[in-house]
Length: 224
Image (cartoon, rainbow, N blue to C red):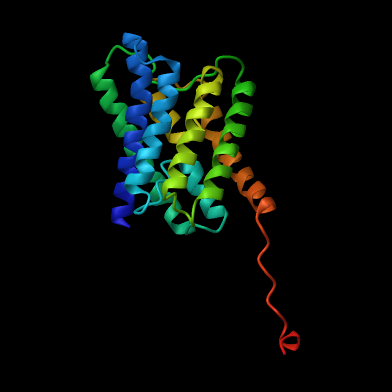
């Protein structure tokens, strides 16, 4: 378990440091662009899946961990330790970015461009799509292998590219929580704490609807 928690903490640290760091650098120097930010988020998740997927499953997201548990693919008793590790990694990343960029106002926190309801809907649907893909390309609770890394990273980059200007395309409670708390920009934070878990849980239901049913065991009287 120690190895798994360290992997989750470091993987989440890398996600928040690279992803929100790209936002900060773009705001400061104007060199990354919106497309670059979206690609950064996708690539760092892809890299962490390859790096720690075989250790912890590379969840990097409390919504993903909870959905795996509800789907029966992950031990319920491990959910809280995983979330604690993810929180540790995310806050360490935002804390470091605060030291490196003390004048930045948001540290890459996610804020709605329009109404809170619009962003809530976007975040719910974005997470639903992401979790559905994760469930379909993962084995058990592990996102491991060429297919998983490319598919999950590509979905994150795609969703960040088209939805980032609307809601920030968080899809991850700790990715939003850490920069919001460290920067003091906690308005509308509830959107990013509630919508992703709800979307991930709906994805579990949708995933079960499209799964191929297990073959029925033959009855003893049917065996000749």
